[in-house]
Length: 400
Image (cartoon, rainbow, N blue to C red; front, side, top):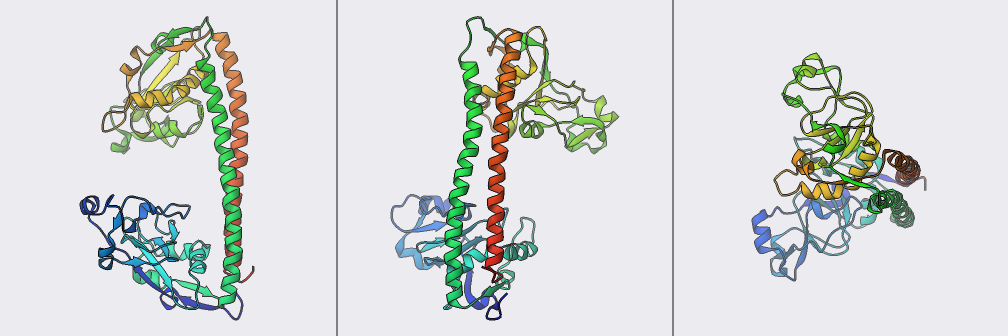
């Protein structure tokens, strides 16, 4: 850091304050969809990309604004509590009212708001902020927050740094948007081809239920919920749950839990090659094929296909293509779910086993290419984030 820079506390260089808490019912009745007024910004209205949602439908009437904390234009807002503490950071372009879980920073003369805004993204600030998180839900107190130190260069240097960071961050944001679009395109390419395969059925294809092409089609088995009985865990038998299925890609190759002999005795070991369908909760209709022998609970359906009727990889791809339809069938209860009855009369398209194998070869090849592209674009996104960190480090160490 240069000799003409000073280390100051946030309380020395700015006014720091939090916003107001509004009862949810009062907010809905009195301040939602009222027409004119000042936007009321809550934590949910600050995105992880630092965008503020001024049109969230909640406003404070102008004649009531003096009853609320006000953040003028060019104020830095940062979430101070909960899972997004320190991660959601915004910069206002107009006067707003805001929630009590947000801290506002309004710098005094001689300090640029935008300079403080960028500093909040730096590794130095983030490291200190994280070290002060406390409480069950995680938060930083106002007293602790005000004690955070910030390097302050002369005003012309602040202006130069902000100008460089404005340009650099705009360029990085554009590059990220392109990489994200390319990543989505790579995923969409495979999804589109997958849908096309099963929409353009051949004349000789049969419409069959999963039960008709299966040696076994039933739910997993677990007399004890694994999380409720630790005595059945920690052995040699893999145990997979719906989350493991959701995280897999066609083949399920990893597991995070195991059964011991007691656990196996109250469950069932399904063989490698079994198709798994998650049937409850957030992962409903997710599918994968076991790449190892494994147990699973009754929140998962297992399918062992008849070799003369179906190819297991074909069936898994087939279920992927029907995922949106199956998810929709699972809605309507407090917790999304499908079950064996969902598939009882549901017909699926099946060509000959030989043609199924040909389709699988093509889908595997396309999926591999899609994965390669996704890996390239994901690495670009990672590299861009690292570039941001590097630029910020140099900026606040006087190295730009």
